[in-house]
Image (cartoon, rainbow, N blue to C red):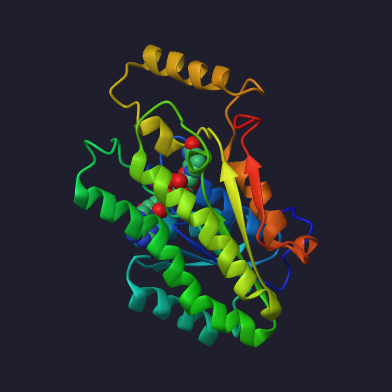
Length: 266
Ligand SMILES: NC(=O)c1ccc[n+]([C@@H]2O[C@H](COP(=O)([O-])OP(=O)(O)OC[C@H]3O[C@@H](n4cnc5c(N)ncnc54)[C@H](O)[C@@H]3O)[C@@H](O)[C@H]2O)c1
């Protein structure tokens, strides 16, 4: 791996570091885990599906990096605690917590089922609260750490399609991140948010799986055209922003929200 050692000596936990659709390129979570390892971190990849975490770890190993895989449902407090405890037992510290997990649900206030609303908020926002609950004490005790939360421009603006529960959960994530940042700034636990715009990931392509190859190509061109820079973002654009927050280059940066949207939200 040809990194510059920006995370040398650090231990990083990536929640949701697998890919929900492993064919067709890397997910945001995978790109972040690979980038952290490339920069010298020891990475723990956690995912609901252990095989998804293992696939990311295999990719990191193939590139010469160091990572381990673990199963974890981020909505279960005991499972999140167990992952954090194991990291502390194994590595003696936890420097970076990266919360990537996010699910969406189509629907407006009228047609979003109540259970779906609850599930989206449980997965997208309660999970980040639980991870902070268990990771912040470890980070505070060791003299600091960095928490990186993956939001979306859906937290800021109407995106043209009804995703009310997703919009709401990501907006809550932005503000919760600032409050956690403020509360633990004195302990040097930094909390920052990456706000991706339209990113061309395998998961996004599955939203269009009903389309023919030609129709899919048209749809992707349409998405590119909606972006002021003329292209969708890539998982590496997200990972590069996350790397800044993870590294000591961001030692005095907390409570920030970094748009990675090619100007989409302007
Ligand atoms: N692609 C885009 O256009 C875009 C835009 C803005 C924001 N985002 C955000 O990016 C993040 C996801 O990106 P991705 O490409 O990695 O998606 P992905 O769906 O490929 O990966 C998410 C991973 O999370 C795992 N997961 C799901 N539920 C879980 C749970 N309860 N516990 C543990 N793991 C769980 C899945 O198994 C999967 O491996 C989300 O937060 C999403 O909101 C994406």
